[in-house]
Image (cartoon, rainbow, N blue to C red; front, side, top):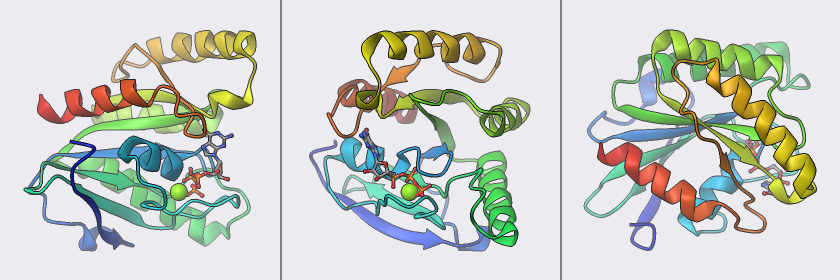
Length: 199
Ligand code: GTP
Ligand code: MG
């Protein structure tokens, strides 16, 4: 599937611009700069499909990508949450957009919540996890940028994150550990994505 056609469909700055809910969707959520867009590029094996940047706040709308021709499912790349440097109005707008999409999207099969391997789960992440629990949206936690930490620190962090995940009823208990840079954990992510859109 990931070696077949995959293309950018559209950007939705507001919920009224979402694509027709005709096929399953999966979404990538996480703090600004955590590596959402990079992970979508690694997942789909296409550099530059989703736009990435060193500067947090790169993705500003819900961006949809069509997978398969005929269409099988869609990937949604989201703006980051918890980006303090953006104007408060912008942060608020993103928060509403993210929350409304995640809570209300019928075709959303699973959300992948990305956590930076260096930083672990922050309060803003917990808020999002709580929101997803309440809305009963199934999600899976994905550690990103694993290449940035030494293996013992990574193991420790993964343990902490896993312990937190176990407190959340809608969280898949098993973590995925990835590096888009080193293409680590990408095959497992692909399997997890396919599993979530096929069930
Ligand atoms: P926003 O759209 O701004 O919320 O950010 P994002 O979560 O989409 O992050 P993005 O993919 O744009 O990546 C942010 C920065 O982290 C870029 O400079 C990437 O090159 C870098 N990055 C992403 N993934 C990895 C990784 O696995 N390893 C390393 N070392 N850097 C990464
Ligand atoms: Mg992005």
